[in-house]
Amino acid sequence: MTNLNLEDLSVEQLARLISPASEAHQELRARGVLRTKNVVGELGEYYAEDIYNKTPGLPNLTLAPTGVQNVDALSRNGEIYSIKTVTSRKGTTGSFWNPEAIESNNQSFHYLLIVILNDSYAVDMVLELTWDDFMEHKKFNERMNNYNISVTNKLIESVKCVYRKE
Image 1 (cartoon, rainbow, N blue to C red):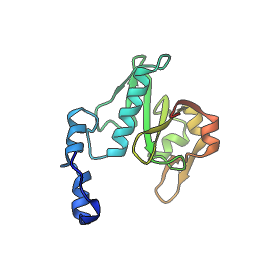
Image 2 (image 1 turned 90 degrees about the vertical axis):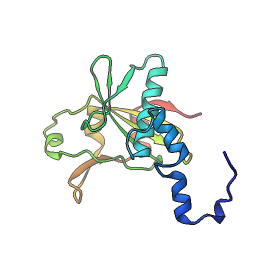
Image 3 (image 1 turned 135 degrees about the horizontal axis):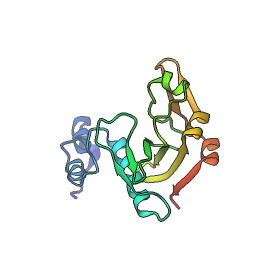
Image 4 (image 1 turned 45 degrees about the horizontal axis):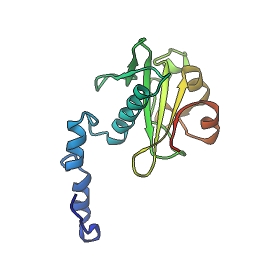
């Protein structure tokens, strides 16, 4: 990598360094890590699959094709995983749409994985919630007419942590 003096660059020039046209972005696409423009979400899905596939006792996961709703990965046993990524231990996950189905307890996944990234976009922690955990911790966002999960100390302490950076 070349040493750039970032202070000398305009905002537009800085944005190009992180754009889909950047060398790093293109390399992550070539490796199959990035499949869409949702960099944070795609990194979280990649890390979740990698951690599950390398950790004894955890099921092997296969990422679902892009565009499949509520299904981000599948286990060999056919269990459905939804994966949400946040960039802080105090973040709120992406949205779960179809509140009527959730309120009717129509299970759309078996497990929810919450991948928490640090400031360098490396994995800090991965939480695994069952459907029952999700139902207990979900919060309704009236303005958006959907549900989400807030990452709190209470949540972290009450669900399975499958990975924690030392």
